Length: 402
Image (cartoon, rainbow, N blue to C red; front, side):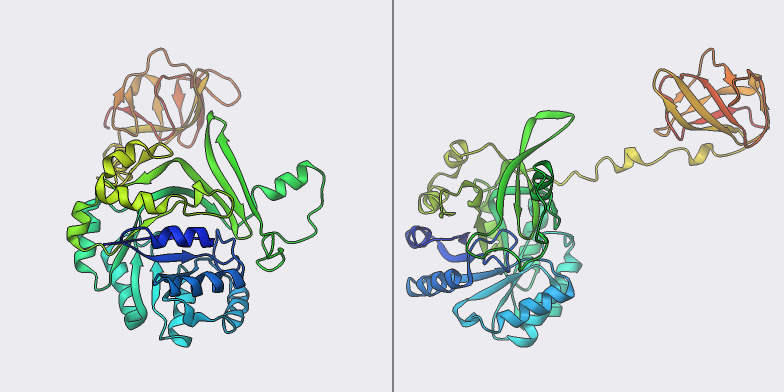
């Protein structure tokens, strides 16, 4: 099992040379990579120096592109020295197919971190890109059991994030710069969303923190580049102390993403020392890590655990005993019903909630939308009552079976 990491400077490269089990470096050009900060010349220079130091360089091309941008990028890439790179890492299937067609000799590393969590889908990508596909970059949302299964089953090597930021949200839109310009009454003279209207010597790279109204004291790292806006969890993914099972299963590469810990032009700070600690004492490394750590999906992905509780249990109650349904309400004030059939107030037996819980409303007064009190009701009538505790939209008012 090997390590790889992102680099952006000669100092990064030198640290990687001294890092045990690190044989591959990832290069992010501005025009191709969502978080890229490197010019074309810088990428070529680092790739040449990496080759001389017996490190394999991988070109990152992870932007998602409309057709016109794709055509422009492909025209530009024909002038790149792609032979300098051991592989090209892509996210867009169109980019992968273009590379397979025009540069079949260059290995492809396909990023399948989003929307590719089942084995059939992953096997499909392996079949589509066949001989050109060198590696699949798997999602951290897969639990260890699935990761082991995939590593043992898939016909190509796999890679997984071992440590690094957890992406919560990405949008290709400008969510930081444009509001900032508006707040300062500055007109945006350029289209921020365009990939080709920024200064390549000073790329857009705006870092900030964002918080939600219901939890203003928790700040999430937020980044905007020329390719969009990213929000990250305030804790890092960390599984470097839990790699034994994956190593035995044949996991090929563990990615160490230190970009959020960058200093000046360096994005692989202490990578040599970190690699040594992973091999010698990963538990201590976790205890002394720069930020709080998590592995939210590694033992089990429980994001669907609440589905059974969320599923309505009311289907069996939608029969002749169902009198009306709650359409709306405001806690502590009122509940709005829609009647299904004719009934009298004396027929009401109780209510059933979407969770299946049954309650018996007490001292309920029914009024029409005009405010008139009534005790006999017709079908398709809107009724308003005083507040009924626990009543939520979808709750059913029940009566005796006819």
